[in-house]
Image 1 (tube, rainbow, N blue to C red):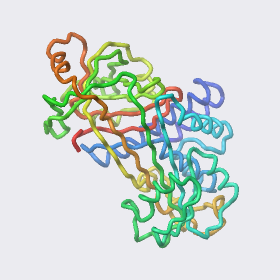
Image 2: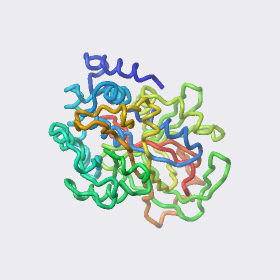
Image 3: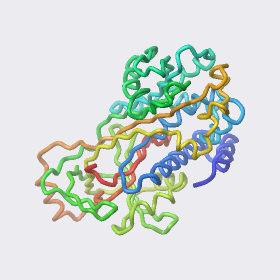
Image 4: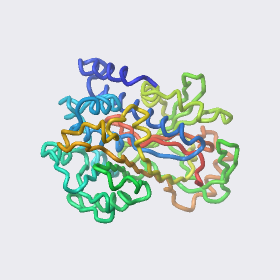
Length: 399
């Protein structure tokens, strides 16, 4: 993975008009950040399912950038690879986020970011105004030493949802609550239907081979359709297959990445993924009529992002002695106690009644087949911007 300094250099070059300008530069940078986040999580949980939303992780960091100074600000900018203090970047992000809920007639996407602030903390009016303008974000005053007394102000639905899993919830470290100043929580939801509906094959369950060699019989969904499919070689020389499954109106697609060799674990591909590779793969598939078999799965994760951000060099933000958040509050010792993120994905669609047809086609079909019958990487990508909104891995569909 390229260092942040290189990413910043590339983005600066795009500001000057090269490589498609700012949109193309941010697309590559956002993809690079998504892969870095994926690799940070994947390395801590070999052989497990997970899903995380890079965009929902970056939004609260973008908001926080309106508050810090000195090294606290520099660390956040290095982690993101850009700064919202650049007017062009800020305006572009505003425009992208404003269109997401209506990215297509058949899709609904919601990004929510809530900053729980200790009640009685003086806040900068400028900071409060910036939060109110940023992608489904809000401030909530809370008695963080008494988690059940969170004061709801602002977006009622988001507040209730976040508060139910916020301070005092399963991811909250109660031992630190009495000293908390600021808690950041983010989430992402996405609902849509496929451009081409799947059918179910609930009988004669096909096998799925997990990373450790365990073979499971799993329910799958199935379709025959014109799809975008590509066969590529990663930097390690592994042959990779990538399939695009578009949602309604084709503004958002789910991409599946899987080694073609059944004996090659997906873990060998993960470290070699870069934004330029993903950009090449997603822009050069061929159109083909294929049979597609995809396991039904549901993944939901909660992440405490502090350890990930610490690893990326964001340390001052969480240290009451080093954090400089004077742009949020003039109060000394004001710092972020926790940064919590949650997201989920469900791939379950498939009406009953097509089992026999699927079994027959498996025996007689002469068209290519894509079977996700072993661990694979997936990512949800908005096609106009190229932003990756979810990324994760399926290692065991039954977990």
